[in-house]
Length: 200
Image (cartoon, rainbow, N blue to C red; front, side, top):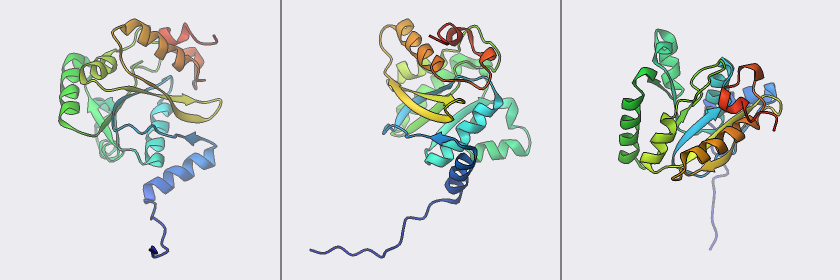
């Protein structure tokens, strides 16, 4: 039996083409993304506003339907419209408990959901991480995909998938070590847990 095709290539969306061009022109590479439909994506190390820009461009280049959680104060005015178009979700960091419960409920209602967070929560020398991302993954029974921005290698990669165990501290130490393996834009601004592993 013969198979016929019309010879046409799949049309690449404009946003994806633009994002891929931006990465290529700046020397960055993104991906590949693991074949997982439901997960919490923990991005880092986070030391610059450029980390968020890189994450959004990489999301578009890879055509992944990822919701990026960003502090709600950035959604004022025209920037809010653009952030939503790029997949950003406003969150109020002061309501961590409520955020965990609401996000877990979303996972239980959907077959596909990828939510990205920056567990360091700040760009400057955070001594402790915000652990909502871990509790969301544990309670929703979904894995944590690590998204690492390496400014030396110029890669935005997803090298490790962690399934929360019954030993949270061991899981976190593993995540800290992986974050420390990537070169951030501003090493002096690394969070305390990552700084403890940096250069090992």
